[in-house]
Image (cartoon, rainbow, N blue to C red; front, side, top):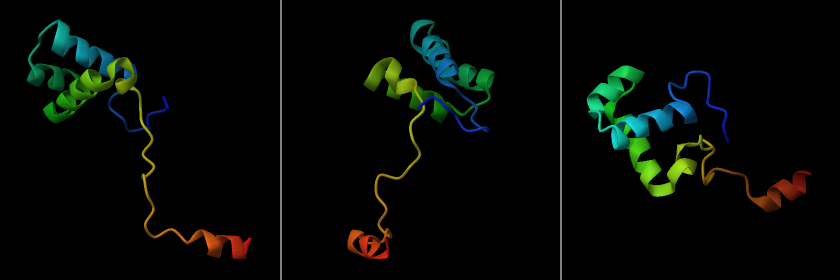
Length: 81
């Protein structure tokens, strides 16, 4: 998924720049965060995701929940349909 929401400060391209500046150019995280208008926590988050999954870790992920505990049971849905 490569469709960041309208208020997203970063895109996969910007995230790659963040990681490049942090890991290859060794710029201070505080300076990177300031340049891109994000928190240092966000910079560390993208570095960690890059280290874990490489370039694929910089792509936008779905915000859909993994589970829906209040979802209607399947047998009820089948009765309604």
